[in-house]
Image (cartoon, rainbow, N blue to C red; front, side, top):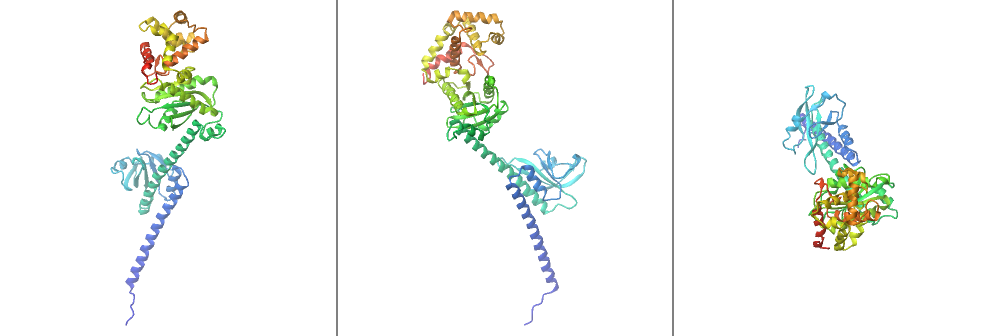
Amino acid sequence: MKPVTTTGPAHGADRDTQVSLADRYARLQRRYDIEVRLAESLGSGCDFAELFAAISALTDRALWLFDPAGQPVMCSVELPQCETPDIRALCAEFADRTAPVRLGIARTRAGVARRCLLTPVHDAESGEITDWLMLAEGARNIGGYDRCLLDRGRTYLARHRTLHRAIRRSAAEIQRGLVERLLRRSGVDRDPVDHATRIGIRAESTCIVVAMDDSVLSAGFGDIDALIAELGRLVDGQIFGARTARGPALIVDAGVSERVDDSRLIEDVCRALSATLPPDGVQCGVSGVVSAAAISDGYEEALEVVACLDRFTAEHTRILSVRDLGPARILVANGNIAAIRRYVEHVFGPLWTEKSDSDMETLMTTLAQFSRDGHNVRRTAAALSVHENTVRQRLARVRKQTGLDVLNDPFAQLSVHTALAIIALRNRAHPLWDPRARGLLRLDRLRHDVESVDRDPLG
């Protein structure tokens, strides 16, 4: 039997096969290197710019990142502005947003045309395009490695956004849990200040606590994080929030402030809440200014205000603070509703009972404004656009009608403030002022509101 001999051409085919296998192995090795390098960068906790730099380091070509509108955001090389390609026409060709890497031609502002690879980066949740990744052709033609790099680059950029979004959500959930525990003083260390500092509230800060009841709304007022973001644009200070078993709650860290600014701080918070909350369906109580050590006490104060509001049913949103109610908070929270109504009638007398008398209505309006302005005649006159003597004359007539010497008697001032605060429970931040209408409410509406408590379930 003759031995089998290998011919020349067969040797050549073997060499071609070996070269082909070597090329395929080299390509797979380079793609593996891309995967390893980008996975290591993402796993190291790098920021978005550092991940883009890691992608750029895997090629000697110019790499760009554009925003969804095609405006340049990052570039791997220093180039004059005139050499930045205009990709807007190429972006418009991506009708299919799931399209892979695509080859195209882009022109610079100087009119120079160059071939490039372009791919969209999609948001994993919405599917919307968040970025465009582009690689420009240089001295060498674009090849399979370039396509692979761009495809894996866009994948890891999308993963970075998804991962960091999940991290932010997780951190927010942890913070909300800490806020809830601080408000309820549940599982808090002996020193609540230490717990507050873990959340991000400074030990020397003054804070305001807000308690809300949105139970009449089928799905509540919405995302508490969105509420915090909106309030943060209207209020000076940092805001923390949580949805507790008793309803949404907020802590406003007003920073280090003088206690003489308490009234202004509370008013700012109430005004911001009024501009942010829906017009109907939310009852909102605002505490006084408290220290970081007394945040849970402030929460209890705010809950008491909400409890007072709950005793007087209303569909519209109401926002009241501890300062608005004063001692009326204790009276309403624990008293009989019918007795409370009689108290209002007793304090105001004919100012309240003579419903059709416009003169009495004028006196009542002046009395309410005088109480609101801290019993200051000058500020009251300015608010009502009358002379100061007119205010004094009206208050003298109030004394004649009711026996209330609100100009000189602190007890009379307290009684009026308490009665007006009870009326406020049916309305908004101040009994005679409707922020939505930006005008004075009619007294017959106020009388109807208070007298209708006899029909309330708790009356």
